[in-house]
Amino acid sequence: MEKKLGFGCMRLPMKEKQIDYEEFNKMIDIYMNEGFNYFDTAHGYIEGKSEIAIRECLVKRYPRESYVLTNKLTGTYFKTKEEIRPFFEKQLERTGVKYFDYYLMHSQDRENYIHFQKTGAYEVAYELKKEGKIKHLGISFHDTAEVLEKILIEHPEIEIVQIQFNYIDFKNSSVQSEQVYNVCRKFNKPILIMEPVKGGGLVNLPEAAKKVFDDLGEELSYASYAIRFAASFEGVVKVLSGMSNLEQMQDNLSYMKEFKPLEEKEYKAIEKVVDVLNALGGIPCTACRYCVEVCPKKISIPDLFGCYNAKVQFNDWNSDYYYGVHTKDNGKASDCIKCGKCEKVCPQHLPIRENLEKIAKIFEK
Figure: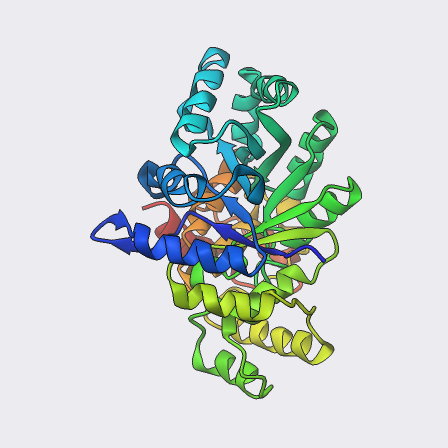
């Protein structure tokens, strides 16, 4: 069985604002010695230092055929079609390789996708693939299942999809992990997982949640349940872990070198943990969307509630991003005119107007 743990290079060992190459070398050596070989970077990671660290610590020390390297085309680094190829060549130079095994159209959402379409980014990437400078073309994705389906229909050449996926986002109406996963399966696309521990939120758990896992008596880390949850799904080929020290790496390897899917008792424990986390001041919305149908300001209320829950439960940095996604073509929380139509149709009898005020204060500072 192919090893499922990927080395995400957005969070690396640091020493005085610089990547600690000595520590990174040790981590790479241990990771490779255990039979793992997948590395993921992007130009903007760690203020551009991640690509250079890959060159110095991986590329210069290991033969090219021994590892798989993924890089990304990020929309902020090009304005026109003519700027894409020079940027790509710069990425090859910075990482010290002649080709990328995977090259992803980075952070695709409805807005970024329009930019990529206008500039012919997919076409340029496909040309680079024909030239052998890209082995496989894919996307990393942050939006609704509907948007993903549109992209996959319009670009059947996409070979792989990277999505945000973890047990707390699985039913979250904002991130839509489950629905997005199902679209990947519908189109038979292999899946890469990012944020399996939600930026550390599923490691730094409240005591009540820790107790649920501790009571299993398995002596496994809290991270192990989150990473194995993601890896247990059919079609998932890699789960990226942003390992920033040797201790985290050794923990990840301890349960991923001989990976075993979650057992029934572990799934039940996760369900209990989700209940604990959802009780942390979140809004108990079931995302029936009746409120959206009657809102005169077209506010995507359940999606904004999902962003709020991610923020208050985990201080999730991605929640601000998703707030932008869900208010791009719809109303913001502050657009609410207090008509009350939403509350009349809400099966949960939620104080929606009051909640939207709270959300506006947090996300529209």
